[in-house]
Image 1 (cartoon, each protein chain N blue to C red):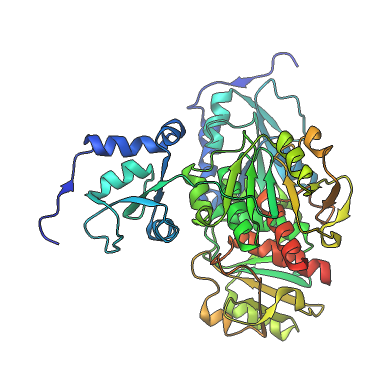
Image 2: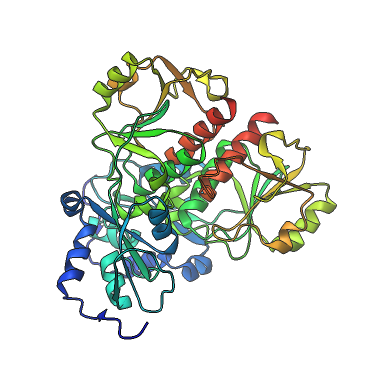
Length: 247
Length: 247
């Protein structure tokens, strides 16, 4: 590869445009977001979501998409990271598809690491669709993407008003299950119908009362009284593991 | 509370001394570490690990330990956080106690959030002792403490050379179980003896070969082939949940 053009100026117009994708507002305008590193770029490519690549000259992985060569300082700027891998993918936002039968609903998860972890575990344990509430942390936040290990490309994710959507799903014969520390069945005693929704609440406050009151059944994860609660990513993963194993 | 003395200078000697506790080296010299926020300070107090409190005048929670009043800017400085709660606890490092029968061993966990999550789940699922390898991230790192939700005060944690300690435990009739994606039993088919060790590996590379070769039995968490692996905090939590439930 001789004579490739390498962008070196941090003030280059293209660089400035890419860097804006760190902002949610601009991501939504462009319907694009970035991923950083070989693994995530590969996941985007495999699932046909990779539009462009930005990388340094010494990165050897090639993808069949338009590629821009830049310095490592520019990679740092666009990624917003202090120590990134030397490749960035510009990806299209994921197109929602059919809802499927196994639905996970997230009521205002706030921490990007938790949302990413939940996405990763939802793929691991065969959930069809994740429904996120309107106030859930942005799916395309770089920390969400990273914590998901690219699994956000492998699952259907939709954003909805949970209250009205629960009613819609109920009309379509989905059974609605809510997590509730104050009662209900042990998670390993749950019997799931074909079509179901599992609702998980916010880190601090759990599932909102007005949503909880719409559930058909409640369940919880048993644990020692020495521990008040589990991390929400962990609790959700245990629930999905248990339900996948038993059903 | 009239006429309490409030430290206002960021250059105050006491403030400088406390701020040093953000550094591992200084924590180890002093055998102290800090926790931030009502919940963590309460956990430290309940378990008799709280030595001192530093708080703003308008924080209303009182503990029966020496208390220093400071400005919110000083709280920010000592905590190293941009938006902390208004109370900091200075805690004694945890004194190791007897090993117990249910042992979790961590081989070089690097991410502080993962270590904290694992500690929290270990308490939830009745592990007696966590053994961390010498290259595991520092237990008293503020992100570990926060992610543990204070549960590090509720469990015995010791640092050891894993290879020699596994031999010592085996001599004492512990059975050694290793996680291995390439084979072994399903985690829910494991039969545990009274005394056992569960070994969990590093985020990127798993359990080191020389440690894995010392295990008596191997097991894994089943999951979809669409997902390469689980987050290590999640995987560990699922394992501990399953073992606690079945034994």
